[in-house]
Structures are given as structure tokens and as C-alpha cells.
Image 1: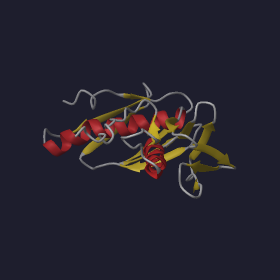
Image 2 (image 1 turned 30 degrees about the horizontal axis):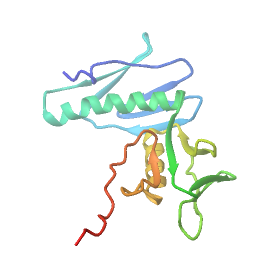
Image 3 (image 1 turned 180 degrees about the vertical axis):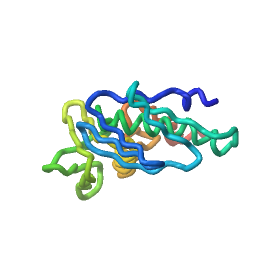
Length: 184
């Protein structure tokens, strides 16, 4: 039995979960998420304990792989609509900066023009000019991570000077520069 999959998912107060066969709808103070899951995995609501239990029918490798994944996705949905998720990016480089223009994010990262990014529904941006950080906030973990990856893709950190956009705490492997001319 999967060690992650067999753990029940606690539902905090203020979050509503509706299980309709293989479709799960989670609604909370931050927003609402709907997702369909595989028919190989059973999702049962325990109203008495206010928990979700995830089960599987056999030891088939496909079902075993989905067991823990389904539980983790459900736990992330519940956490997201209750507290939300955030990904922090750092801006590194001389003259590089990020600014807010209304709801949109403007990145000045060495191009001849600012790169403007509009947040999708359910995602917001915050910038801090002192710490040179960009925060991507939202209730859908998958969407928040994808938007952060798209921002990082505008100017990924380069290995020679380390300039670019990186995740908070990301280590960039540095390379040595060009060797000088040798003595004759």
C-alpha cells in the first residue's frame, strides 16, 4: 500500500468538497477548483471525520502509481483554496528590475523593450524593489508553478555572470570565463 496514498486528507473548516463519482469539486475562501480523476482510484468522503479517503482495487502498477498522486493532488487542491500558494523569483543583474503596471508585470531584463506579462485568472503578481523579488500568488498550484516558469523563461540565469531570473534559493552552476592568452 502506498504510504502517501493511504493517508486521509483532512478537510479544514470553511472548505467544501463535493465528490461526484470521479469528479471532485473543492470550494474555499480563495477560490474553486474542479478536477476529474482516474476511474482506477476510488475517492470516498468521510463526513463524520471530515476527511477524504483514497483507495485502489488492486496491486496493478498503473493503479499503484496513481494512488499517491491522486492523494497529493487532492491535498494540494484543498490547501490551495484554503491558504493559497506562492512562488518567489529573484531578479539578478545590473539594471535588471521588475515593476507592476496595474495588475500586469513589466520585466526590464536587458532587452531593448520591457517584457510585459498579464496574469491569468486566479493568479496575481507582487514585486518588491528593495529585495528585487517577484511573487506569483494563486490557489491552483499547477497554474502558479507554470506562470512562474514562464516568467523565468523570459531571461533564465546564465552560467558566466549569474544574471537573469531565478527561483528563490536556486543555485546556478557557474562556469569559468575564457582563459587569458598564455605566455610565449
